[in-house]
Image (cartoon, rainbow, N blue to C red):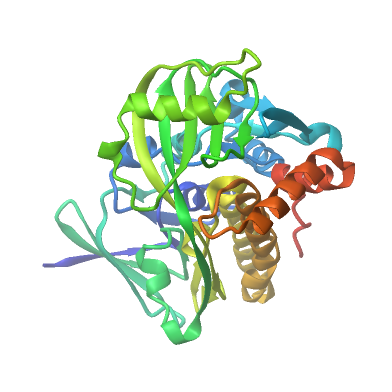
Length: 400
């Protein structure tokens, strides 16, 4: 098949929030990019993922000029509830962090905003790009080959940004001997539903229950998002809607008169739970960002926020390279990201360990878990630590 040749400065693999935000930031810096995505635009815009944005993420989206709809439709939350022993305990996020908060705004909505911004900028993005392969990443002239609409293409570039997740081609293009992977797989998963029902509470509820963890969340004033701890190999056929609602009522309601609002279940699925970090986050002319470099369990609401922090660093390092002909920030990209990555990994592991039931927990371990919950809800210092991490630690100043 004949190939057409193309040229850009930065080839971005993946049109999730990491790839799209990186492309947007680089466009604002006058750096041309091409984004390649193997899925269709409709699929990318419909993927329901994370929905909690840290304060720093909200501020960055605003500064980048793509926060108007988020500010209009997002739900700003100043606290969360921890539920155990049949009682809810509010953690005052804003009061404990000097006014910082979280915003509930779905990842798919962020993706839609960024795609619209890229279309308005007439910047190239190829959805349903097939057979994507990376070449020459350890040299001075990398390239990406791919097919689109039946045509073969070669995209020549200066750098490649791998923003295509843990199963994408980018991370696997790096020789395994050049990487160190740290990971943990948890012995449970989340069964999640999206329901057409007005949220019955104004803030998120994290429940530790004898029958397993549960989470009450929302996506809009009309849509509720709910999760149940379940087995990793759970058969969804064994979970008809009535059983899901029954279990949610049992784990989230406390007998104080508060009740969940039920509604039509729009989506149902099982999310595995794992932690993973790949080091370093770069190899030659290839830089990894977001899930391509690290995975966190969703308990701490850190996945998309870490991706945003990554591309903030990468966009700045690339801008300095082209503006000042300096490569020190690109060389230090991985080190600049990993401190925040490991902090978020620890917080996500801690929240997961604090709230879930482990089959191998002895009565002694269960009592320790309960003592930790009581301490977090009774100690200002412990509650402040949770709040600081949950709303997101402030971004470090950008060097150079």
